Image (cartoon, rainbow, N blue to C red; front, side, top):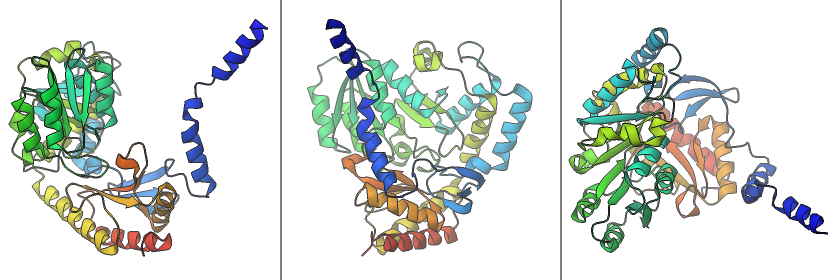
Length: 412
């Protein structure tokens, strides 16, 4: 009898996947309506930063984070090909062992020059940059004060570092100050903010928030993943645009958006920053990026230093699309364009998926974003504009949205 009970208990608790059953059901229910899987799209061929072949037809890309359109830049591609010839396909080692080649040092110098900062540290992904930096500098006994809408990589960095985590309401300066005021005197404090929040495309009031953080003796980390290359006079992000970059202790960014490749980084002026190369586990225990990747990133970053015309054109695209979708009757995540991200709020997941599919049939790809990744359990169609989108393409996109919205009864 005892053996039987033991076997039954084992059977009841054996499935470690049971925790995912609600998500499995939600996806199954969605696909049972006949909609194309919005999370399984395959691009058969990418023609340019703004066009790809999807399901056998030419499709405008409006959901790729390729903000500055660097993925097909001839100089960037040539740099990657040359590095493949010169250094081979990969390093097969960590940066602290055999994984640092001259292109790795070159891209870190390019980042220092781009941001006019003394130190730069490159990670294999942007996720790892947040995971590594946050978990290393804020540990047990320290406090992290962060926006409730922070990216998953920021939350995971907090969890890994075992610091006391104190969230506050999104972009609420007063709420942030209340949290800081309650932290014990003398405790280590880190405030983590984002320049652009990726779901709604809204920006943070960094000038005011950083002033409050410094008032309470906190260090400040700003994730500029969605603003680097585009926002600010030199493309250094929202902190530069608001005139407070010199007050930021750590800037986190990624190569997988405006830079057009893959990788993550942190730049800083802190005099002790270089010790991070010896104590940051996601840096020490991860194979370094292939030399071809960092060579493309280095070339792209240096070209972004002189990309004022591209930045201006991208702003025009953002303003035009925001106004066009608003005039058509769509509800957007922001009342005015604040970044290259424009999110269209859907009534629910089912109609959001139907709208996503209708747009795909029109020849337009956007991101379908769903809870719990979205704030306030919203379903969003997230549009990421590119500096390579022509004015004509933006007008096409507005027409595609209007026709799709009418077809699935989102409008009217």
